[in-house]
Image (cartoon, rainbow, N blue to C red; front, side, top):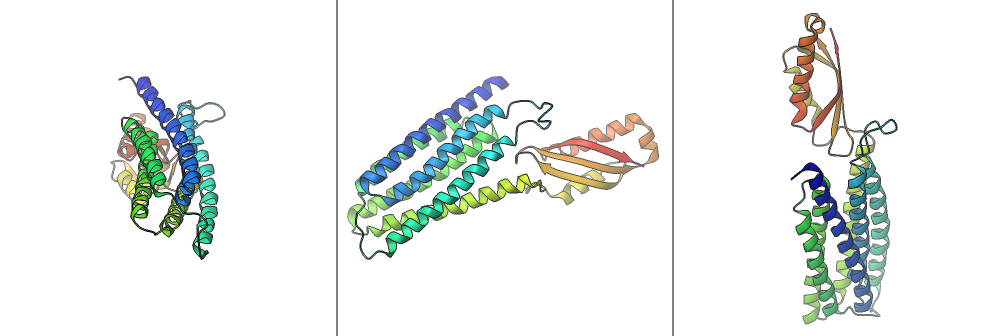
Length: 288
């Protein structure tokens, strides 16, 4: 399979995931209103966020392939972070509003409406089928972007299974508050995950050292190479959470610095030493 064909397959899977997510968001919203299920209405807001996330992932998957130019010397990879930032803020606002709504329902002595458990089950099963098919298609992808979207949708499947559980319980009991409680739990779960996503996005924007990389380990790896006497400065950051960059200045012997062949060989060793950590070295300066 060629590299371009792999990209086309990935874009096709993301496009399918977008349309399936959009379809389910509408089904869940309409189903929640018809069945008077606050849990489904609450989760439909999450489904809208999912649809935006997948849609942006689809668009930015294409944008991110653009090469660097005079205006974007590092390329377009950080455009995906803008989508993550906007969606996180949207989900935070939506989850807070729905939490307040659910708490208000719990505070009432009686409930004006009762959820239709059978309708909840039907909507949830439809969602499980649609999202399950999207996960199956995305599982054939190779990019980290597709993998992230697949995991995001898989988490939604667990939420739908919770709705199924609530519907089954309500079919045989009179615990109508379970729907409201479940909607509150869903809203809080959305809020927690949205806050984590927001922080992780901001963490990249402020150009902190990637969380999966320990600067001490990288320093030890480089200083263990023959010819490196000392690291004078070391800078580590990430473009988009996947592609990491490094710039450093090392102290070497005057003899190595005067021998261009040895110096170039050392730079090649440094690049090779950190390649396994997905680090691209963009600048190496040596001083005697």
